[in-house]
Length: 219
Ligand SMILES: NC(=O)c1ccc[n+]([C@@H]2O[C@H](COP(=O)([O-])OP(=O)(O)OC[C@H]3O[C@@H](n4cnc5c(N)ncnc54)[C@H](OP(=O)(O)O)[C@@H]3O)[C@@H](O)[C@H]2O)c1
Image 1 (spheres, rainbow, N blue to C red):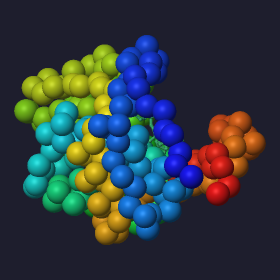
Image 2: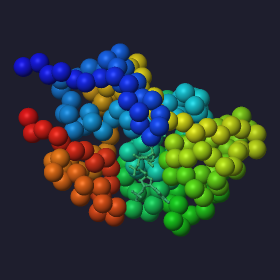
Image 3: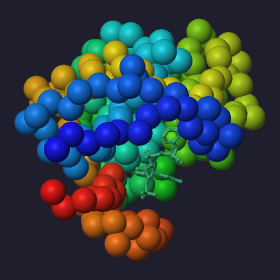
Image 4: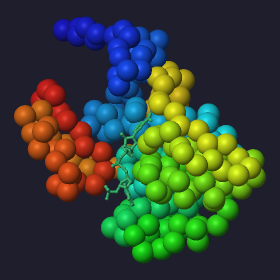
């Protein structure tokens, strides 16, 4: 039986979100729904942060905060694919996951000095606060500090600082689906839980690292 999917314009956190059919992309039949669910928001955010806002290109260096998280893990893989050098950051517990994703260097924010990362062309921040503020000094002339966490208070001296909210984009979503299908992109799935367990799945400190997927139906 055909299912009707409700689309239109929705408001999320005061911002209008255009979810019309022209912004959707087909899901390849051989991709598991739980895997596919991990990609649209994180993938589009990573893509737009790196390339639309950060203007990252081959041969540049990007520092990705939260490199083993939902957005960061995809940013690491996309940046690697474009031929950038990738420095990933996070807690000590994230080191192995970040290295497995392919970061060239991992910086443990709990024990190492952020300033030791050296100059980079792009910082991609998902954490905000003090880490975002201190990242501005890492950006070399002409580079960009991109954040999805909050509007930045500190600007790079000779570069730009950008805060953005992800936008729907059919072309980018289709490109992400192609990468998912041919294995270039692997989202980190933390837990797949039934709808009834959704509240418990998001309790801080009890979350499984990686994307939490809520299965709404069992078919
Ligand atoms: N502006 C936008 O359009 C947009 C789009 C998507 C997401 N977001 C926001 O972006 C943020 C990240 O999303 P996400 O899905 O990537 O979240 P996530 O899966 O929780 O990833 C965040 C990563 O950063 C790490 N981290 C957080 N604080 C840290 C700290 N102080 N030191 C070291 N590591 C730290 C986390 O480690 P632990 O898990 O160990 O804390 C985790 O690995 C969220 O606040 C989300 O709401 C914004």
